[in-house]
Length: 115
Image (cartoon, rainbow, N blue to C red; front, side, top):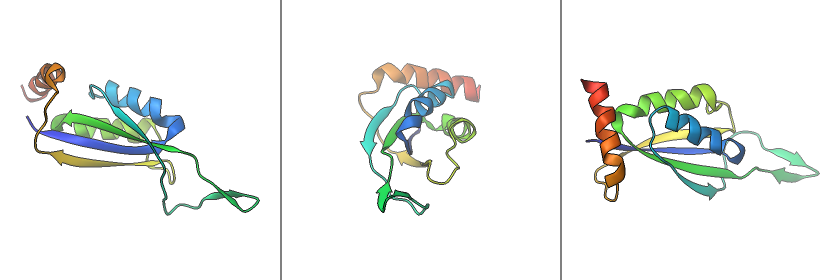
C-alpha cells in the first residue's frame, strides 16, 4: 500500500466540517492540531489591532487512491479555495506503524477502487 498525508490548515470554525467531509470521502480518521497562520491575504483590523482567527492543522493519513476524492470534496464543501480560509497539501509517506485497525479498511478501499 502507498500512503499519503493530507495536511489541511483551516479556520477553526470549519474544522469539524473538514473532518466530516473528508471521512465521507474515504478518510478513516484525523489528527487535529491547534495552530496560528500567517498568509498573504489582507488581514482585518479593528482600531489598529490585527484580527486573526485561530486555525487548526488537520492531518489525514490515507491510502493514495483516496487523496483526489478527499481534496475535491474539501474544495467543494469547505471553501478551501477562498483566500484566507485554508490550504491543503499532500505529503508522501514511506512507512507507517500503529495502523493495524485501519489497514483492513485501507485494503477494502483499495480493492474496491482497483478491482
